[in-house]
Image (cartoon, rainbow over all chains, first blue to last red; front, top):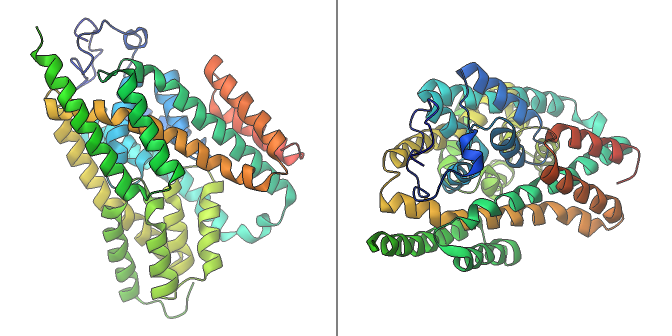
Length: 217
Length: 183
C-alpha cells in the first residue's frame, strides 16, 4: 500500500500482505484518533453498546464509522488478539491503543473498555434479585440477544470481503473456515485445543503459498 | 460473601486467577469450567446458582464478557474480591498480548508473520459464524420466540449491511420489541 499516504499513524502497515494490490477504496479514507482521550471515549462508547459481545460493535465503530482501521487490518489484529490468552476484545483494544499512542494508548483503551461496564455490572450484581423475575426485563434481554446474533452474523458477512483478497485463494480459505465451523461449531471441541491446531494448519499452508508466490518474478 | 474470608484467601484467589489468565486462549469464558471447579467445588466459596447467575448477569449487561470474573470475585469477597479477580485475570494476559503484538508488528514483513495473519484470517471468520450460531441456540431451544427473534435478526443483518446505523439503536429497538412481548 505504498501509494496510500501514511496519515500520521505510527507503525501503520505501509507494506502489508496486500502490498501488490492497489489501494482498496476504504484504505484511502482511513483516519487516526487525535489523542488518547479520543481513544478512551471511543472504547467506552463501544463497550457500552456491547450487549451479548463487543466484537461486532468494535468492528462497526472502529472500521465502518470511525475509519481507524481497514477491514483487513481489523481481521489481522483480531486474529492475533484471539490466539493470545486473555479476553479477545480487550486484547484488541490494547494492541490498537498501543499502535496509536504506545503504552498510554494501551492503558486508556483498556480503561475505556472496562471502567464504565465494570461499574454497571457491579451495581447490577448488588441489586440483581429485584430484576431477575420481571417478565419485561426478561423480554428486553431476549430482544437484545436477538439483535446481538444479527450483529455478529452481519460482521461475519462483512469480513468475507477481505477474505476474498487473501493470497491463499477462495478454495483454501473456504476449507479453513469450514474446518473451523465443523470442529468448533458442530463437534464442539474446546477452543484451547482447536484454535492452536487450526492456527498452525493455516500458518503452514499460508507460509507455503506465500513462499511460492515470492519466488515468482 | 462467605464468612471468615481472610487476606490469605484473597491472595490465593488472586494467584489462581493470574494462572488462569495465561490459559484463557479464546477468551476468559474458556476458563469458566476451571473457575467453577475452584470457586464452587474446591474452595466452597460460592454456590452453583451464584456462579451461574454471575455469568448470566455479565452477559446481560454491556461490555466484554470477561466482566463475569469481577462479579464472581464480588460475590466471594465484595469489592476487594472483585478487584483481585479482575486484575488477576487481566494482568498476565495483558502484558503478554502487548509484548507479542509489538514483536509481531516489528516483524510484520517477514514470511512467518505474514503467513500467520494470512493463514488465520479464514479461521477467524469461521469463528464469527460459529459465535452467531452459538448465540442463536437459546432461541432455537426455546422455540416459542423463534418467529419474532428471526425477524429481529434478519432486520439487524439487513440494517448493518445497508446503512451506517450505530448498533445502540438496534439494541434499543430489540429491547423494546422484547419488553412489549414481540420477541
